[in-house]
Image (cartoon, rainbow, N blue to C red):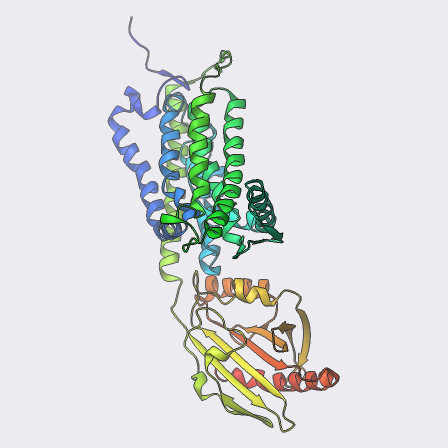
Length: 527
C-alpha cells in the first residue's frame, strides 16, 4: 500500500525538518537556526566575561562555573520529551521578550547596572526559544533556563538584610557550643569575648552567602537522585540546615583554636574559612542523597498524551515556514541592531573644559589652599580627576571643597555607587538660590567622627545640570548614554566643621553663599 505523503501529523513525530518532505532543506534550516545562537553569544560575550570574573573572585559564587553545565545536562535529560514536541514558533510573544531583554541589556550597559545585563542574558534565551521553537519547548526547557539564574549574584540584594541576623545567631550559638565544651566565653552582640582574645563574627562570617552554593548544587542533585518530591524537598532543606549549623561549629572551632593560642585565625591550612560551610553542606547533600534514594518511588501515573493535530502537508508546511521566516528575520535584525548600537553608541570619554588644578584659590572673600586628596572628607571611587581645597573666611570659618569628575563611567567606575549612596542616608534636600532667579537643589547631611561633627552639602553635576536625587542622577546618566553616547559627570561635596553649635545657623548661611558662588564657577571647568 503506497504511503500518503500529502498529510503529516504535527506533534507525534520528530522535528518537522527531519521529515522526508523536508530532507533536502534540513541542513539549511539547522544552519539558519544556528545564526541567532552565534549572534546571541557574540552579543553577550562581555557579560559572560564579567560573570566569569565574578565566579573566579568570589568563593561564594564559584559554583557559577558549574551552572551552565548542569543546565545543559537538564536539557539532555529531557531530550526524549523534546523530540515529541511540534515546532510552533510563538512569534509575537517571542519577539516581545527578545526586545525586552535587549532593552534590559542596553539600560544595564548605559547605567552601569551589571545585574540587569546578566538578567538579560537569561531572559534573551527564553525569548529565542519562544521565537524559534514555541511555547511547548519553553515549558520543557523552562527549568534549565531558570536554573541559569543561580550563576548570577542577584540574591545579594535579597540576602544582604539577613546578614546581621545571621551574625548575631552565629555568635550566640558559637558561645553556646563553647560553654557546652567547658570554655569561658561571653557574648556581646556579634562579639565573642574569650579570656585571651575577642572575636568578631563579621558579615563575611555570617555563612549565609554559602547557602546559595548549597542550594544551587542541591536542586539538581535532588532532581536527579530522588524520585519522590518530598525527598527532594527534604534533601535540599536539610542540607541548608546543616550548612547553617556548620557555620556555628566553625565559629566555635575558631574560638577553641584562638583560646589555645592559634596564630592563624582560620586554623592550620585555613580549614576554618567560610568555605568550610559549603564543604560540610555538600557532604550532607551527597550523604542525604544516598540515604533518601533508598525510599521507594511513588507509583507512577500513566500519562495521557493529547491527540495530535492533523493538518494537510502543504498547509502545515506553509504555516511553519511563514512563522520560521518571520521569527528568524525579526531576531536577526534585533540581535544585529543591538550589536551595532552597542559597538558605536559610546563616543568615548568627555574631557574637562579646563583642568581642575587651575581652579581659583579665591571664591569671593574666601581664600583657598590646596590639599592632598588623602585628606578629603569623602572620596568618590574611580574618579578621573579630583580637586580638594580648603577655603577660609576672614572670620576664620573653614570649608572643604571636593570635586570628583568622571570622563566616562562603566561597571565598578560609577558616579552613583554604594559609597555615594551612603551619604544619602538621613540626608535632606535644600534649595539654594544662584545667579538670577535660578534655584538649585542639593543634599544636606552630617558626618560624625571621633573628633568633630561635619555638615556636608553634596550634589551631582551632569553636563551643567545640578541633580540631588541619586536615582535621578542614575537615570540622567543612562539617558545621556543612550541618546548622546556619553556617561561623564561630576560629584561635588562641600564640608564645614561645626566648631560652635551656637553659631551654626550663621555658618550655614555662609556655606549656602559659598555654594551660590561656586556653582557658576565650576561650570567653566566641567562640561
